[in-house]
Amino acid sequence: MPLTLDRSELARTGNFIAGQWRDAASSARYPVSDPATGKSFTSVPDSGPEDAQAAADAAHAAFESWRERTARERAQLLKRWHAAIVANTEDLARLMSREQGKPLAEARGEVAYGASYVEWFAEEAVRSYGDMIPALMPGKRMMAVKEPVGVVAAITPWNFPLAMIARKIAPALAAGCTVVAKPAEDTPLTALALARLAEEAGLPPGVLNVVTASRDHTPATVSSWLADVRVRKITFTGSTPVGKHLARESADTLKKLSLELGGNAPFIVFDDADVDAAVDGLMAAKFRNGGQTCVCPNRVYVHAGVYDAFARKLVARVAALRVGPATRDDSQIGPMINARAVAKIERHVQDAVAHGATVLTGGRRLQGEGLDGPHYYAPTVLGEANREMALFREETFGPVVPLFRFESDTDVVRDANDTPFGLAAYFYSRDVRRIWRVAAKLESGVIGINEGALASEAAPFGGVKESGYGREGSRYGLDDYQHIKYLCQGGLN
Ligand code: SIN
Figure 1 (tube, helix red, strand yellow):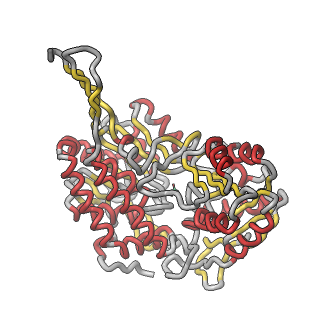
Figure 2 (cartoon, rainbow, N blue to C red):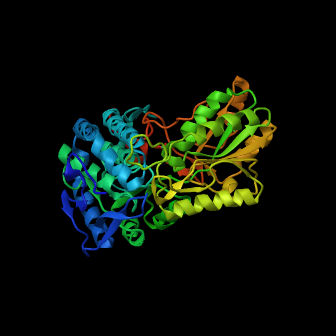
Figure 3 (spheres, helix red, strand yellow):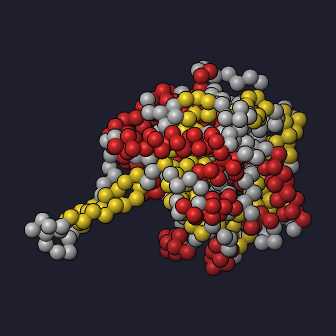
């Protein structure tokens, strides 16, 4: 199916470097595929270190003049970019659905979500205050001022092709940094369209640069930024192994890092919970983006006293989800991103069944039945999950809910924390003492209490333990792109 946009110029298929649209230096390209069918529908540059260096040259050259603009000027450009994103919602949603498989309605929501970070940081740019520190002796003035760190490399994931890159670029630009970005190999088109809209909004050449690369060429492309002393910061969303690799490889130049890495979120339903609200919260948290979200509940713990009622209500809701092509307006779950993703889901479900789980609904690939392609998986609920299953330890990243039965608060909190990860956690209870106790004990950067929808531009998002460090969004979000300079002036008496 051809890609049809109202404004065809948003379907960019070149790198954006120094304000120009270019092929890779080698002229190599790689195909971009529709996740439903696995068939390619366009191609983009398969960049290498030479292209990454050209982007870093451009970002470095643009840095001094960008940082010297007033915060208000930078804010105005971000506001224009925000307006352009919102005005082109429909085309951006179509591009995103096509390359990522997210249902169209959800893709529209992601445009609004991603744009909200651009607006937020336009507003934050003009409120980035320093401090006047009470001097320790007469005749001195002591101050802390905030400065942009310099060139930022943003490496972004495929699951939220617009929101994740927007929430890295916007604070970086607001702080006065310039950016080189490498979107995920599966989803380059949304990032390139965003760059086009930034260009239309009047962003000066070199302030934002985007290069694309295939899975094979990504390591060499990114490595050239890791070794480059001019790149002062890496911001990455993706897997924990890759995050650790980036931390190791950038150690020689001691870059500042923000790493938003994998999760293994627990979702706990206590016996005093409002079961209907808990089912609503789980549906919102788990099935967003077909379960391909770092903050998705991966292990659902339900107290034995409410287990049967919760399972029955949940299964009815999950079985009613409409799976369909991303481009159809009434689809609720689209195809998974690629064959590897479906294979992992299948492996987790088979392993769980082999270890004693019962399939309460789903539990299989969907093919035929009006679904064109091998990457659809039925929304699934598994009963009687246990710690021996792979899905206890690993993030499934798909539409699978395993239900673990528990009896005591102590055991469930211990099990919930028994993972190297600590991105999101959720729990439902109506007991205010339990709420404060459990919220304090859960080892997680983000906690939903009687709430399944957590992320917003106003909230600090990020993990603890091996889910990474740094915070995106909120009034803390600029800090990751700034350093503090201490000024001490003497001789004033
Ligand atoms: C993610 O990291 O998967 C996205 C998190 C979010 O914005 O909710």
